[in-house]
Length: 177
Image (cartoon, rainbow, N blue to C red; front, side, top):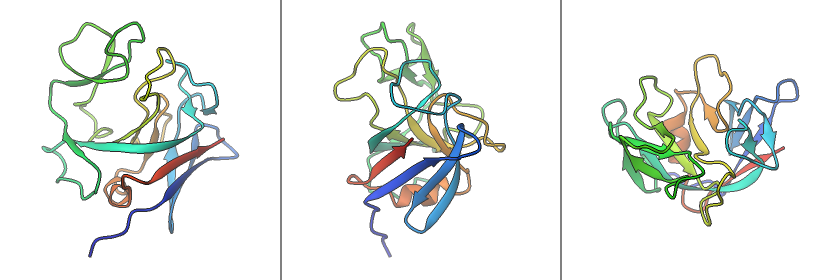
């Protein structure tokens, strides 16, 4: 049976720790890690903040060697060893997927840890791309101790695939400060 996509998923910050929060997705209440800078309204590259915004899921990237093809109605992209994401605001490739090796500053999508085994590309700073306003805000797996991210929203590894099933092209991910 195919589940209907959720209309909205909320992300709230913890009252006791600005770097942690909860994702509310229908009946699911999921612990999450936020950026080391907490939730911020004026996002800048490198500030470690999770932007307060209403975001759209553009697609799901996944490691086919570590996880089965996720069940989702979003576009799927297989992560390969040469995949990266440009975070160099001076580059014409800023905030876009790139092929490695590359000279601009970038993040590797093929990681040794499991954080990017399933990644939802949240539409932060994408249309239009504004240099220096932050890149690569993803929904991905958290570290086991839920330490802060560089600005992404990270949920438990055991629940990311279940959550991705409920995210569709019309789902809004609302990060509230």
